[in-house]
Image 1: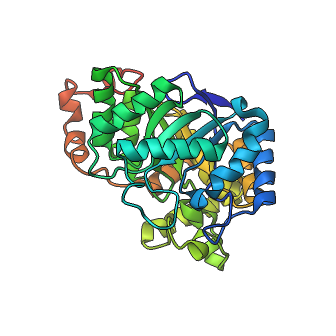
Image 2: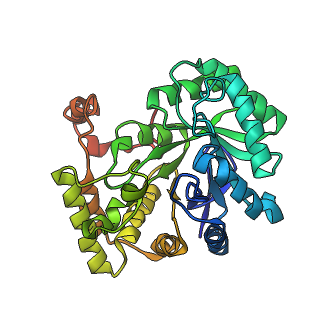
Image 3: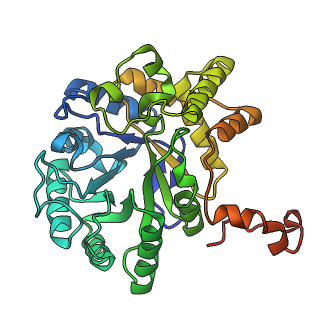
Length: 351
């Protein structure tokens, strides 16, 4: 396992994978019991993993409580990322959901207690709630950073325009900066290529990428009727709903045959390689349900795709970028003096 800083706005050192702990617990009716969760945690730590991603709503709070037992012996060694917005109970509560200052304070205090710690390294706003002013949210996060209860703040599942506005407001007000984004990204979900990832690269934000296997679709297991997120949770998954997704799975399986790696390892290796080619590190959040799946993920650290294999996967999974990218692509040469190939680009994308 190698390490990097979480984006270019922090000195926070994280492992190149984050261990998603949504499967720590069984309160959702699916997941891993305490013993299997312990084995996964130990295996990840033995491999050099330090970055742990949880949320107050994962397994209705059970994930945090289980994780607290594992980090207690050496809390400072691990980078713990938590989230709030959805609430930690099955029933929605008008006062304990959303991104208001009231719920922010309530949630962070509850998570600190559940995790058995006095600080959270990285605190994600899990989702936008469409009603809380960004100024209120940022000011509340700044207070938590100032108090030491969280060290860094970040935004998960927010659209690019909201993230950009948050970054700008924090800079202008001299509030705690937004450290990064968390977004779904895989070979079957590349919508983030349109705005979110270019924005993150330009602004120096860290990028944590969830569901790198498309909810299990990229393993090929659903073709033979195997169980997984599709059969258990019936949410946050992809299916072969169109010809492109079928072509992507076909290509992943073909390259797995060529390399001797598993389809999961090929899929995550492609994301790792894409991150190497970007201006900011991409951190896949791996979410195994057992040690076998975790070992599969860890095995991708040793997989190296050829340039031809990388390009095949990139091309078969590419999405149309849409407006305004289509319009600007056609006149890029003219804008850059007639021949874009003669102009050296800056190493970091221009905002």
